[in-house]
Amino acid sequence: MFLRRLDRSQAEAYRRLLERNRLWLQPWMPEVPYPLTLADLQKIIECEHQELKRAQRVDLGIFRSLDEALIGRVALHSIQWGVSFSAGLGYWIDADLAGAGLMTEAVARLVAVAFEEMRLHRLWAGVQPPNRPSQRVLEKLGFVREGLHRQELFINGRWQDQYFYTFLEAEFRARRAQWVVKGWVVD
Image (cartoon, rainbow, N blue to C red):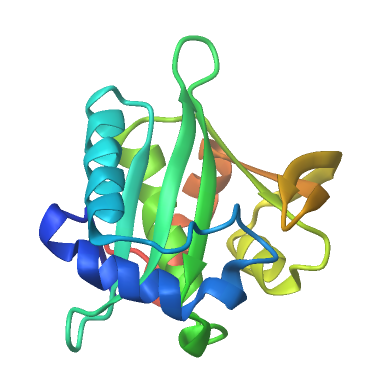
């Protein structure tokens, strides 16, 4: 797999991926509008590019190497500079590919970008308690669960708790060689 920004020409592939995974994502993410039009997705992609230019977000597609099909998304959001140099991490993958290790690799690659290219100090992620697969991705990479944020997000018609995970640049440096051996990042 590989990561790259989406452009407007990939809006239809993005729309199909979201539609195919609407029910899979429903418990974990804000509701995907219905109907979801090509124009909606083109506008979303354009907004993602503008937020990247302002250094506020980095949204990337996860693509399968074999056929370059879009299979998921990974993002750094809520980027804070100044005294914290931190960002939130979000991710999801096509339901048919869940559990294959691709999400761990995609998150590892984005973490490497965050610490090596963007020079961030700290990443964080919120994961709902029932979402064990997402928790395993973070724990496998070495993220530390710091606590529970009660009723933090309104998703799927109700307020949801989230476990709060963090990962520091020094922790990444300590694990980077292992990630290279596993093929998650390149040397």
